[in-house]
Image 1 (cartoon, one colour):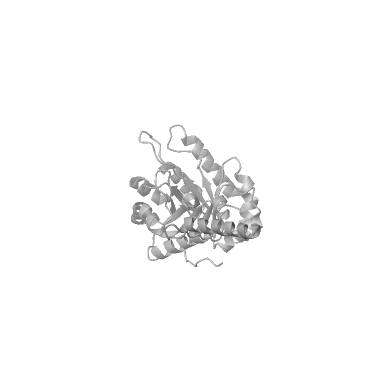
Image 2 (cartoon, one colour; image 1 turned 90 degrees about the vertical axis):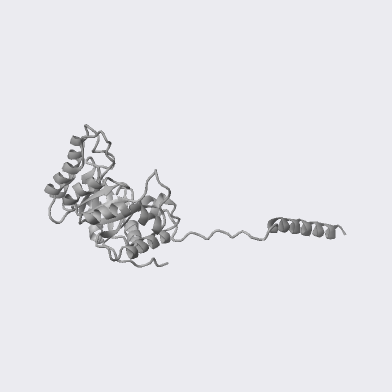
Length: 279
């Protein structure tokens, strides 16, 4: 089965860990789905264990971006040093590794009102610490504060909007997703930046075909929007477990009393057969 074709800059997927996957199978899956970018969750403790994985991905024409700080909220008081240490570890890896990440994505969490810590300084540190060939991005929750998008924009190449939330209904249709991200896409557009829309398999998407059709639909909707950079899937574990195309559900009869009539006819036939045998 062929997936629909679409033309976007980033066609990505989120990977929680590189260690437990058979890479040839992973590469085949990504190639068949036209996915060109892996967003790999890494921590400062195991970043060097990702080197071989990143090297194999590059050999297969796939970019790998390190997603950091997903497990930390850098707006919490007392977390600033830990967040900076995690960032510096990845920057150090990129400066020394034979297989550096193609980009670094900082996972941003909502800021408590009482917090006196923000992500601005962190992105400034990242901006000064990366080379020209390394992209910088910020992964944002839905409805992130407009003023903070404007503050971060000068330090990043693009934003990722997480188009899913525990507080919203399932976002699995083109219209629902476009409406949900409209405010943030507008702020990103106004800041002269670009946005990647990240959809979640857990939002009720039944098969790989429906996801790829959603990718194509978003690419078509934003085809004339210079702020639209691409789409990504959260996450690989759930995506690869889906069928290519879901089996159609069996249609139930719309004739009133049809099921009861079927049972009656079956019972009547069995009774007649039993009577004939006795005779």
